[in-house]
Image (cartoon, rainbow, N blue to C red; front, top):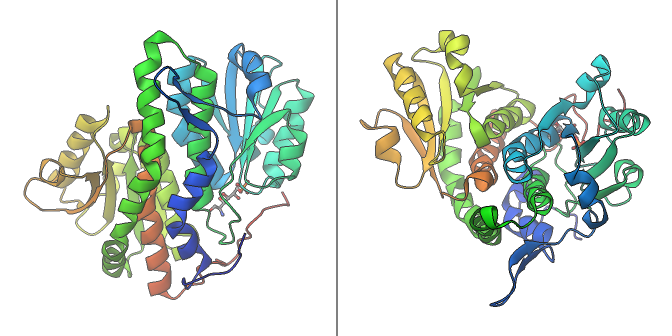
Length: 374
Ligand code: AGP
């Protein structure tokens, strides 16, 4: 693998733009769309001997930090839907602080780009002591987390250099969608849904290629936001994770305060922040949450909120009838894969904001690529 910036100025920029290729590599050899009599299916070699045990788990616990935690959060709904097993979320340090309960009947899934993050690693030791089946999802073959878990899946996104994780995030979501398909298994009742997801996965690199064309538009938006103090990102459902991850990118590289907010919580506090100055990104795709997000947009507009709405292509007029907000139109994909498409414009926005504000893109102050101390 070539580790240089190629035609790009920064690793983060390169890694954002190589996502169609990294996603393809992540899926290579793992998705089967056979001939006439062969069903569409998923093959994950590192998991196959443990699928029965996982299916018998009392619950699945996702454990990670930062972007890896956000990727797991994005995958949680599809795993719950396809497996029928309760899925809970743990930030590694918080699990350790609380010494939260982990049982022998649990499957604990450790998500980490580096496979070396100290908090995640210590949480792995804790889960092993408590007898859980431990699954590793990492981007680094031979990393401690990959070695010390019972089984797992490599992300195969390729080496990531920029401290801000971008291509590993989208590949992690894709891996966990495939894990959900593998655990869910083939049943008559979920066949159409499974096939739609598998078709969606095959087409995902093309959709990401399409959304990358928003690069100039995101640069223009960054110019408008360059002097802001703060940016809020509202999401829900599959895209609550997108809100958290978009805000994390903006704060860690552009050094601008940014907060991802669960839109369902808007009336329970965040609404007090809304005025005509504070920029707010609202994610409103055509999914089960669409009408609720339309209502959130109406309420924000009624308070003169300065809105930037991310919506599915062709929906600009329905999310923003009088043209009173800025719109980012993205390709619509299967709901559980939408976070992969939606994060790309926010990665581009964070990248351009950073360059325009004159900060170090690949080595943000105070941060390290891999946090190996607690
Ligand atoms: C990502 O942009 C961050 N730099 C950070 O949150 C990172 O995701 C976190 O430290 C976890 O790292 P890992 O995936 O290597 O475990």
